[in-house]
Length: 221
Image (cartoon, rainbow, N blue to C red):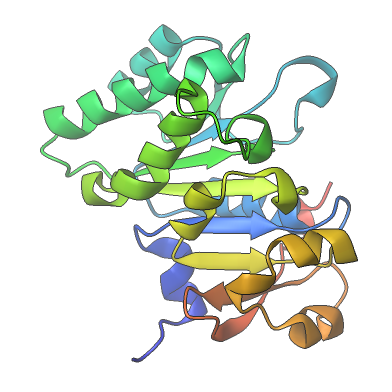
């Protein structure tokens, strides 16, 4: 099986899981992906308050109606700031499915979920609407031309079905405990260890290394 190039992985419709400790460069990398994506609409699902990730490009949307209106205005970049991300995820999933259907899946969407373990936690519970919404994004979104990017510094705490649904996995340095939680995914930890400062290693779902990835300096905050 041939593997795609880094450029293809970053721009096609397939999902990317971004894993690594804090202050390693992973969020800066995704901040650049959000700002520079060739896709029609890119939505960053952010926190409010002290947990809000700064420097996110786009218009602010504080509820689902704001998101709907921004898409209708053909805004290309949206920072979604719901009062409660867990409660908002099922509604966002439903809204973007409607948008996909209304455009006959021609509108290329991208959804970035920061600190994804908080909205898609690893749990044995069967009825977790916010986790299940993320599973639908990662499992069925591609068929609707929706690319999903999940970010976590706690891979041991994220829903593993959502993680497995990501064709690409960008990996930064992390603790040995975090490494152990994703030991079955075939990551090349030697490549991760030897990557340049602030760079991560992009893997294909087979475990093949596609190359290193790093944010341009202007996106590092």
